[in-house]
Amino acid sequence: MPLTAGSASAAVQTCLQGTLKYTATNAEGGTPLTQVTSNGRNTNWELRGKKQAGGADEQLAVGNTDSNGYFNACYTHSEALPSVYIRFHSASTGLWRVVTHKDSSTLYSFDSTTQNNASGNIPLGNVSVPSDKVYAFKIVDVLNELYWKRGTSSLCWTANQTSNCDQLIFAWGANNTEGNMFDQVSRKVLMNSNEPDSKHFILHEAGHWLQWQLHDKWDVPVTGCTGHTFNKISSATCAWSEGFADAVAAYTLGDYRYVFKDGTSFDFTNNQSTAGWDQGDQVQGRVASSLLDLWASNGPDGGNWNNTISVMTNRQSSDFRDYFLNGRPMGGLSTTGPAKDILVKHTINY
Ligand SMILES: [Zn+2]
Image 1 (cartoon, rainbow, N blue to C red):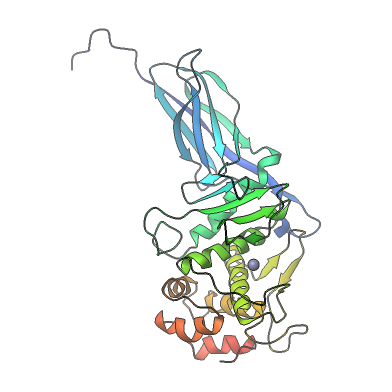
Image 2: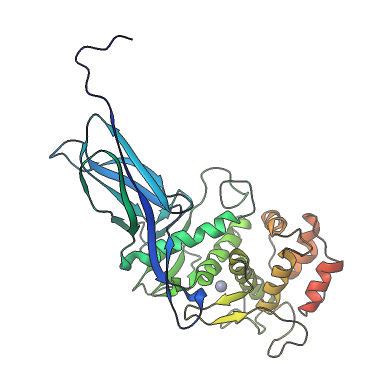
């Protein structure tokens, strides 16, 4: 191949490399509360910089950190870049994000240090999320754990979609007035203050959104839910909605509890004689513990919740009874033998 006369110098690749980190309160570690540093996994980044000295900052590349929080953000130019930096956003791929407010689409973002006259591989080491944005990036990171367990081969959150996936959107703001809910108007999970200190809190609320998605955007017609708590009767619809959300959080994190943001926790272990517990399927903790036992590694559903996820995709149930008696047979799940025994242990007799 002949060289072209007057060709420019060889291409120069510039890569910023490192690991996204955030340090946050970890309620799951119990009391007294402690801080832990975690990797910001599958978090969106944007490589930005100038191609010519004195030029404008522009977007050079986009991507996301990997499942260990590592990033390798590269751009190839005809020469070294006069300046380059990486901007992180509180979003993951196109599947979930954290915005500042329920009526806003603004993400939390921050920039790394700027590298000047940059070329080749430039290690940034650990890049830490600024303290005032930690909660947003923690939510982004924690939601990976639910996404990985979503129980469908669709890249979307549920098998109801295979493209143009709906995004799970959290709206968190330190001073937002609304929180502690999946808002049925904006269809966002709303959190405020230090609510994201608890992963269970994050995943419980995500669980409400997931149930709505599994039911193809049909809301369980919940009544009698005011003041609901784990071990007391609310209503059949409330116990199903809240019990499922409790089970989503515990199943995702591989435990059997709900952890509050102050580091205390509620243990879902119960049987017919557990003191302080009401009985039956109007008790959300009875529903949650039944689901967790059905999905357990040694349980009757094959060691995971995947068939329940499939059942819920195909049948809209307004309470646990309908899921168990009418939904499970549709998904090839048993309603007798060990499955029935689990419910009886948790005082649910159908
Ligand atoms: Zn709830």
